[in-house]
Length: 111
Image (cartoon, rainbow, N blue to C red; front, top):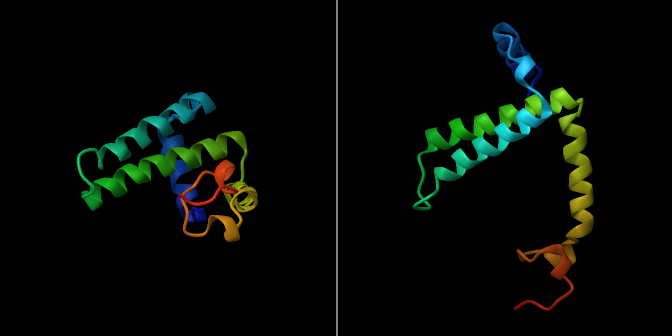
């Protein structure tokens, strides 16, 4: 997850501009979706992409995710590890390895 240096820099950036007043959970969630759309746009017409542009858009998505986690008091390490554990249960290795099948269909035979 982000280093303490990155977190401090993001907080300082927002504080210096007095932008926290605009960072409601709703606005941050909207911003994540908007920036994710811009990231997806980098791949709109071909699988090739501009590395620098993708990294810039990815940074925007991650930054808003960090701001949202901070705003709602979520520990990113904790919530990612918790989600990983539940996802492991949904996708056991013996059923999911090498398959991109949704977990509700894993008991079915491969097509």
